[in-house]
Length: 283
Image (cartoon, rainbow, N blue to C red; front, side, top):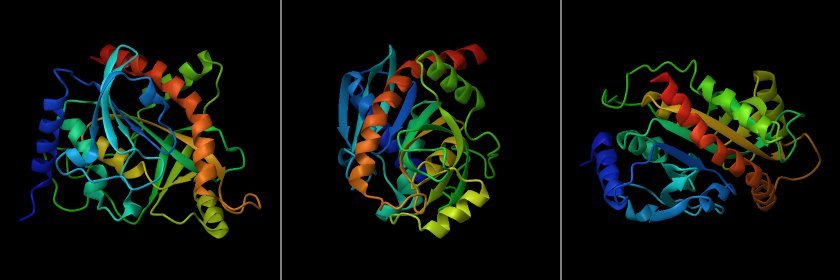
């Protein structure tokens, strides 16, 4: 018999809470390929491998360690996913997004999502950091499909401001103070795992897509459904197919992500207290 989604998320949250030793994470971060620098800045971290957590699946992709980290960053208690689950790994949308629902049940209301993405616009060169202002879901599925449990959120959640405007403004302000420029753009979520063809890249550019990737969209939708505030930043690791003559290689994507990830990690560490201060002002 299939265990209801809410019960699965509740069991996982209870397990994690039992491991936190009294800590109370206020913000969650999902770290993408090669973007583990934030993890190194988490003080006194508790590691929980995904296979130990009830109903969590395992990350099978190079560059995704597959563990949950709970500790302090910038004086704030946080939880970070070092590695995520992808739809292209064969997992269901429920499995991919279960961690976000678990964070929600843990009382977390702020989520930062990072990813490695291809630049579909000429101004998004490798190494650029792009704040996601909106997305286009071309994954052929929606994580809210199926029966809806009102304890998570409403049946038809509004997606007008899925990426919180105040968080986007804060990210740009922190970047400017640090002498870094962030681009803004629309992220296109794709099923993967194959990279896009040149014709597909041209089509998505005409649709208004700037960066192309294989994650983030399901997690952002579920976070919005659960009433969480979201900031998402893409690390542009390569030019999309057809924008130059070179083949796209995963190892090179990882290397660029690691270099740019150091800058992104520094920004996120400075952003964490700023985002929570914004929430306190609203309250």
